[in-house]
Image (cartoon, rainbow, N blue to C red; front, side):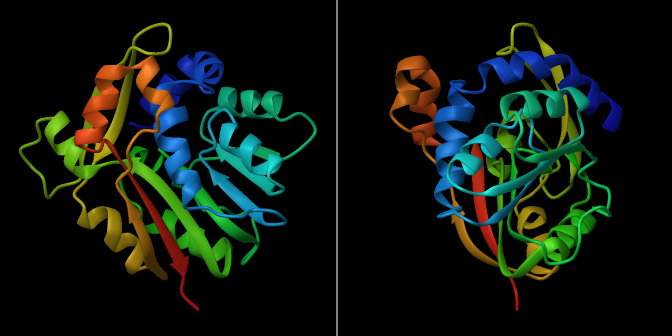
Length: 236
């Protein structure tokens, strides 16, 4: 499963990076809503967990943050460095593995956008996020909405964490994407059981710029969410 996910992102990395600035679901749905939970980042240290092509890092550094980012895909890291020359710290790392190179209580914010559904068990990852965050630090996560996924994948096992796959057609050529679908409780309980308090949950709607590029999905997303954004605070 991990190799399938890595191969897919290695294959689409350059196209993903080329489209990321204005791809509707990223630029006008996920990013504005996820960033609305982050707040003022000037002078803050941010860990961009599964940073992709470095677009979030670019925005946050332009706002005065100091950003460290990692991703499973070496090509995504190459694109992150190319997008953010001579600033930020980017390295290849598996989201499921311990962050041994990062010290305790280093970051004010951990951001993980549209990535947690690529790992089966969240427990260790959430514990690592807690470890590297300063007391009362923020964890911001965006994921595919569990209710949307249940319907989209026609699941008959809502309460299980199950592997699923689909084909993405928006990045120049079709690419098979593997991930894990999970129930709502498996999105929330790993946070609550590993040192976090849920501060805000957002079921986002697209911003106006989305409509001109993709009116069909603009209308659908205003009727039913495809993503879910969460802000949790490190206890203590």
